[in-house]
Image (cartoon, rainbow, N blue to C red):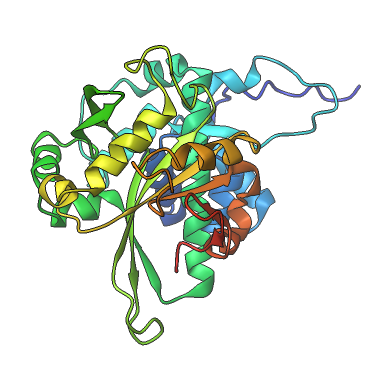
Length: 324
């Protein structure tokens, strides 16, 4: 009689085993992005896919990692096997805190992981997929260093940055936008904030470039013509445009310039976002502040692609690289 397979959401008892530096790195990566799937982890750590899956299973069975329950709700006939999605488990968090690799906070990881909604996890995986691809791409080309948000918040000046440091929160700032003779103060909290530092020997004349990331799942309309105060993606664009003008970025963030990268789940939405961008500035010509790309073209295993002429410019619709 064939052996009955064990449900992927069910843990089995494991004996004592020695945690490795690679195990600790897996847990730190998962903590950093909140959710990663096995393809993301493989792209970041490399090695044998089979060995990695076995190690992830061991870390899951020991409680160092959790598997997102939502991925087991339905079976898609003919859909093939999908990479499993992992969260940090309570034992994993305690392990990182004990080793000084995470800040101690009162967090019930098991409860939070069980309560994670589909939209939240889908959004987190979009963000993680972008950063994994960016990291693997930069590793291939060399000469460019990724500066992530914690390092930026520790070094930048600006009122909003100081407030985030004080409260130990991610980057967020208020901005007032105006449309159709209406003023609205809103908070901008990007899905990602990073910079690229260039090796002057390989990239002469290049200085540090700053970027904000928006992961657009398509859950909100681009415009909300009936009510300006309702959620709409165009409002975010107006917020970034207002931040970039009149020295607001310098005052709030300590930045002289930045670009906004939007990754969208729906490929056909890119063209509509480009059109919306042309309405951001008063002249109706659009701005080179915004770059757009579909999520479907991002491959964490071949991140070099997103460093090429991958992005559509919101002003002249040319394909550009973020390294330009």
